[in-house]
Length: 171
Image 1 (cartoon, rainbow, N blue to C red):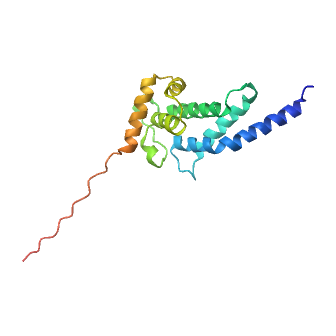
Image 2 (cartoon, rainbow, N blue to C red):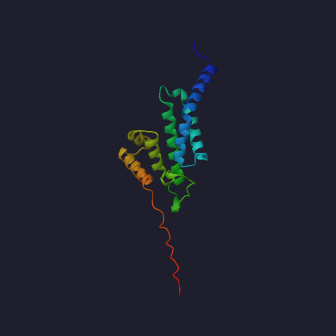
Image 3 (cartoon, rainbow, N blue to C red):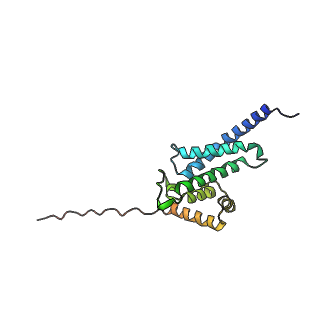
């Protein structure tokens, strides 16, 4: 016997709630890493997560055995990259956009470097999958990941400390 429409919607809602309960925290952490916001003050990351979860819920019935976490992560990544392109992309007449406040070690990275690093190292996504998602060659993914890792491991040095001169005793 076929389920009624209301029963199908209730089952769908329960399944999705269970998914969010299990994966929501990790997806929010990944989004926070991407946006380089503070974990306790991350409105852009929460917005990214909301859009990714809404998209996943909208296509929930069409997943047909596909991992909903992968779908949500993919949408999160593409939405971040799309927003980063619009936020930091080239502007007419060479104008430069001011970046929003970012914190932590990942703030030194470009959006693409952050995305590749988070997908490869935090999420454990294979180079081939990252390359397909971003539409770039696999070798480029490796290069971006290596450069981002080097930037994190060997941050640029700050200015040299000022040398104070001792006053010569005048006699």
